[in-house]
Length: 483
Image (cartoon, rainbow, N blue to C red; front, side, top):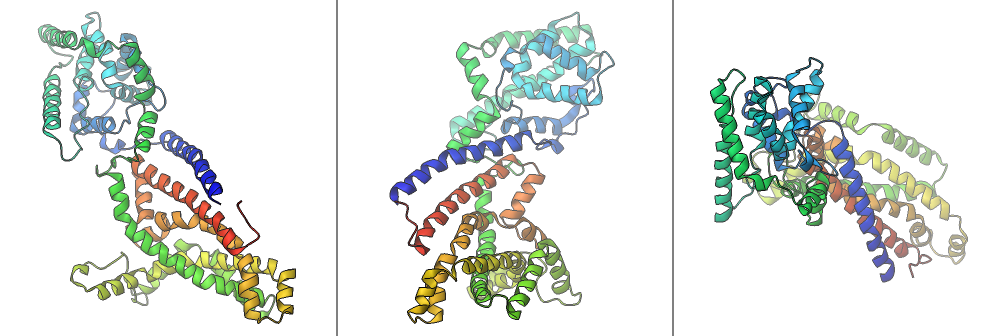
């Protein structure tokens, strides 16, 4: 069995890698842009700096999370004046043919190119044959694109050296933000600003002279894909796009709610469904079996969101009863409660969520148990056990039920991710701040790091659950061996 376990664990590695790749592709190529609501700047305006602090905040946000980088490969080191000038002309709609979507995309491209666009922007600015509007826009874009990334901003407990680095970068960025002019500026102001930029560009020329090795590193590693796998290799899920808190810290803070809710639901499901399935198989085709089957199928067909909202209105809001709390996992004054009072309060809050999260799975699992037992209850070894004079309870529970539980054990593969992942519908309806509602909110807010963390953890737990499920077969059926 040890060899089998080792092989399965080794097989889990490429499987998990494939799942991780699918998650990355789906999230990065899905429509929508994370944090786009932070940007309120109008595309196509002459004055790029008029976008204000929110546009600048959005630019910094994208830099912090590599959202301004290409997905797979990066060839931006080859950007020159023609490419930059074409985008600037599209923003200004020089030829009158640029659609609003094209102008917005051009502005987004210039922002995302970051410091890679500096060479081209300086070229456009220095070319006196260009229109004042184009040169003005180039100067304004340089005040953004020439800034260095300051990725230590969200890091806590900075060392003295890191603090000095943050201050130096902030000081340098503040200096370049002042070097711009508008289209109606005097020729002297344009010339003075252009000279300032040219001097700065000459002083920092080494930053734009990429060696072959640097081009190779940029091409493969300055991308979202490389960042994703680098973080994954270190088990670092990054920082949430929403509140800048570490994703793992946020996930751990949600676990107690989902585990409590899901573990209680799983216990209830198995405690009721297995005995009910065995009882129903013994009384196959009797009136009682048909009544129970009909009721269970009706329970299975009811959507959980409908039942949850119905019970919420019926039993919590005084129409007609107000028996249970309306929402939440616990009361607001739990700090004043004893342990027994706290457990009672939590239990009272989660009775309805547990019921709504359990009844459909209970109905399905009991039918699985019934059909699994019916497959073996007429087997030769069961008849032999009866012929030996063994009590019917021993025949059913010891001989038939063990082998009939294999379909049930197969469902264990989904048990671990269910415990951790929680239920999106139940947690959202009942206002429980668990993993399900956290995932739902993260998807709505396009919080890539949070969504990837939850999906990757759930995928890993599914693989572990499948291994445990396979190994448990040998415990209930001695005919199964992994040697």
